[in-house]
Image (cartoon, rainbow, N blue to C red; front, side):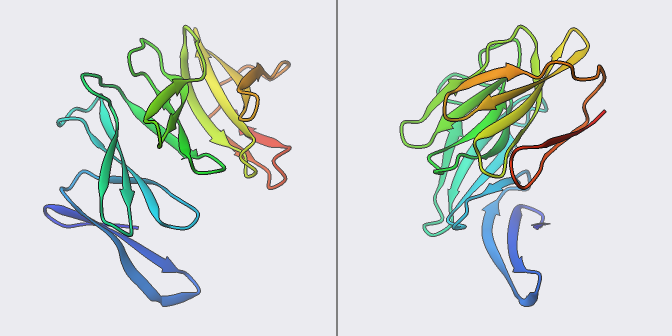
Length: 189
């Protein structure tokens, strides 16, 4: 949970079955931080913040809980964009996200923490709108707004290939959720 003070944000951690375990997980200066991901071992946190006060663009940060160091991931030098994190990859070497960096349209992408490389995974002339990673982290379901028609796709994280799901009813997909077995995807139209 987030607690906003006048010029800082605090991220708390708690085991709901042990309320006394409540403690400050991360302290951040400035009021505009948003928590968007926590690694499995709770050693790293992904944060976003507005880019120089912009409503259109944002920065993506990696915070090391043990050292307290914050590292700017995106944008890189002389670049800007919107970055919508999805989740850490299975090996936590990077994260999946949706971005419009240097592109007219938002695309599915992967950011590698070690070599600081942003790899664009899709190349549509339309916006990728939503995405969700399966529990086993082998598939990413995502939607593309193709001239007002929402199309559903699945990206396979190992092969880096994606396919459109055919025969899907026409309509606006407002929610997607994978079943625990990572084989079934539920969507709300």
